[in-house]
Image (cartoon, rainbow, N blue to C red; front, side, top):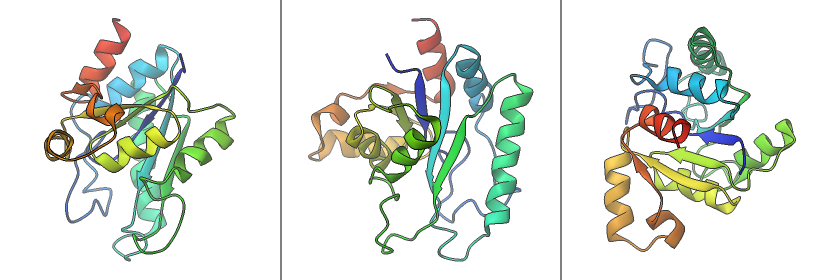
Length: 185
């Protein structure tokens, strides 16, 4: 089994917003998420984050703003005794023709290259179909959390045509619930 876990950011680790998370003040961690990352890290899992950040391309925030959010995330996880191995983000808009905007696999490719490990068999935890699809393209095990867009995504999974592996993806209340389950299995 892979010891890599890939997480989406907005809606999984922190509160999501239809108006984008644009500043450190708007970046609000979900209850238990940073502690869950730390617990998984302490248990020997390598934690990577793959996040679409089209607000950069749209001019809603700067790379410095994004770095400040990620610095806060890293410091909260480290304060809880854990470590995030890498954070990869797609700075492009939906029409930019990149290969890194989920559901495309570019961010997972970047994670594999930087860490020197395969994502095959890794958990890919997200709150949207594009998260689960991005993981699936690289042989990851999709996991849905009900935070963020999770409820809408679950409804889509049940009522539309999606890959069988996504229809069968385990569903957890939140990241902390996933971590407790995995660490006590």
